[in-house]
Length: 356
Image 1 (cartoon, rainbow, N blue to C red):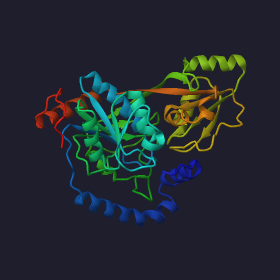
Image 2: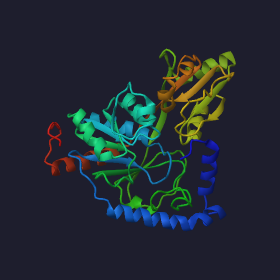
Image 3: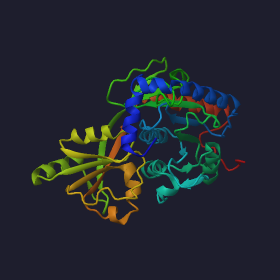
Image 4: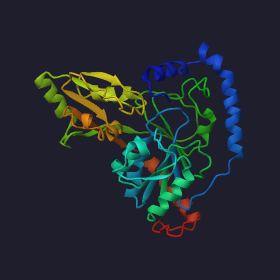
């Protein structure tokens, strides 16, 4: 997706219904479908020696996969697994496989993989070739016994044991494939995955026989970017009212509207600033702003933290997001992964020292 919010907004308007522009583009969607189908048939999946869970979507752009991935890492760890995560690392400057640590530079590994590494403390690797990223991760962290792929539902070169499709506020748009619609695969693809995850507060229509589960989200602790001070979002709201201060909510994510709505739900009357997904902060969007409080997402914070002019701005608070997954959804993943491990002849505590 474009990092320009106006272009993104225009595209989503076109993709929301089957209007004149979408109809003009529809023949190209048929070509896209034919090319994609041919590519899938000619691709031979490669198998990693541990169970693989793909957290993806068929809707182009963000649907909230990364927070779901982080939550799933924590849930699987609580059930005795040792998860690792692989990702393409959208927007990074290099294509080679790289191990991500909490100290990595977002420009080299991508903002979302860095966020996963910091928030979940799981081993993470990035690379366009997910299979190679998985091998590198297992070499570097032989204790990992299950791998989650953040995105990659269409990356058929990597074999997988569990597929989860996340559906966001945009639903399925007009139901057409790119470029006439927002879908990377036909709606029928949802019948093939193991579970649908509805990551939205709005009602979306999805015709599929696949089990579906809603996730709940709430704000966690807020952290001042400059010094790490921790406060509750309601404390910030109270202080703003007491001082009659003004707030700015800024988001460089795919669906900023939900972030803004959650801020307002805590009685914070804020000015909204849409930065565009994966905004790189090469230009400081907060310079010259008069607001006394600036609220940003954790995804944006991993990039802001390396820019002194922004990091040292005492007005900026990073708003944490807590995602709660349905227990039955975690059961599905746990059971299918355990069955896959059994087929591989693996025990949960088996290490990966002999990976070739």
